[in-house]
Amino acid sequence: MKLVPARHFYQQLLRTVDFSFVRPLFAPFYSTGGRPSLDPVVFVKLLLVGHLENITSDRKLLELAQLHLGIRAFLGYDLAQPLPWHSTVSRTRQRLPVSVFEACFTHIVGLCIQQGLVSGHTQVMDSAYIKANASMSRLQPKRSRGAAQAGPTRDDEGQAPRITATPDRLKHIQRFHAAILKAAPNKPGRLVSNLTHYSPSDPEARIAFKSGKPRILAYTASVSVDTAQHVITHIHADLADWRDSRYLLAMVDATQQRLNTLGRGMTIVVADAGYCSGENYEQLEVRGLTGYIPAHGGYKSEHAGFTYDAATDSYTCRQGKQLPFNKIFVDPQGNPKKRYMAQARECKICPVAEQCKGKKAKEKRLHHTPYKAHYERMLERLATRVGKGMRRLRSATVEPVLGSLITYYGLRHLSKKGQAGAAKVMYLAAMAYNLKKCLRSSSCQPGGWGIALPAPAPFRWLLLYFCNSHGHYDK
Image 1 (cartoon, helix red, strand yellow):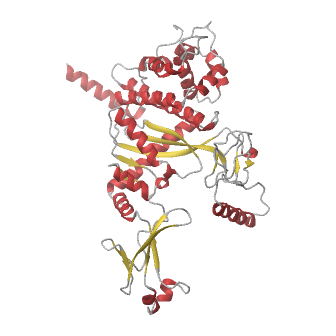
Image 2 (cartoon, helix red, strand yellow):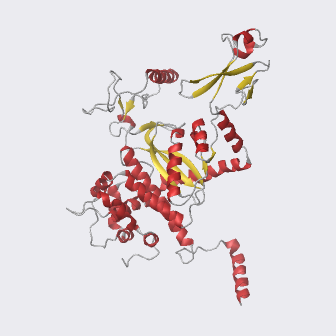
Image 3 (cartoon, helix red, strand yellow):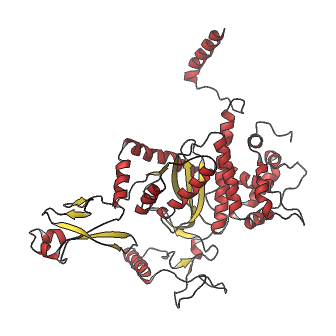
């Protein structure tokens, strides 16, 4: 379209990216006969425009495209040609599997690699809650456990799902709620939990909260970002009722597989303390990866007054008595622990027994994680100069990316329901973010399109001096 200037954003995007890669990916899901379907290239371009323009509604997206010459030219439509209906876009997105959107995202990551924007060796991982398309005020209670039944948790009659939590876990929630009611008996609102309540409009959405913020129904956007130019190398929609540590290994494997497929290798994983667990530390070493993940504040590397000997796997108290390894057990939170226990007869005659073991216990017992050696190696690595630099690099790399996705790329809330719908939206938002990276990179290359800005006033004389001296040298 001649009315659109060549330097317009979407015209530059057309010159940078060949969107014909979309058709082979969508071909298995399109019929060769019958009424013509929405062109997959137009479909993907429309959804990308929605995220580039920070629009979360298909209806508003088509209203903008109807009036915007640059978007029409980007889609390949002239002024008189009618655009697709918003319902057609919504149905097409709903019917296509998540794997197609993931394949499109992988192609864009490959394009970033071709332009030299991805180094691959260091990946920073983090997550953020994204508000779901569901209301907290419409939560409904789950049905009681009743008799054990095989099959799905939601029956064919469309009734509420059954409670699947154990009785001990439910008692813990009841005690927690009782403590809140006792502390604030006159505070309005009701107490709900993912164990006892669900959203009828989006059963996969989970109640999520952060300190100082109201509770919301949300999904977790887990991202992996390359440290070279902050390109998103992986994004995934996870449920919001698990700790981040439960998702780390899946994120590492998916990122590593994508990078290996595209000819890049990953060697370093950086994350915050939310991804800390002994199993994660161990599995990173098994995969040959170097992790920089701080331990939780509750982790204690030492027990005051006791010395640990790794060779004999035992503790020694101040009185010189040994506490050998006793057994491995699981604590009430489901974490494995190693128990070290002194002999009761030795504690009975110890002069400091009461201060050491207490009045009721017969012998002194100590506990630590089976992954103590992995924790110690991780803490030692984080204490180095490189480790401290990695912690600063994490916050400077991934947090701005998540902030941009939420603020500028249509992830402030999800308009689609279900985990699959959330994943499709997240893949497209990450594609739009990476495409802007590609566009900026191509505009900075020789012969690329760029915008010349005036130099700041204090430095104009310096720029003029170098230009004049360079011109004199050429002569």
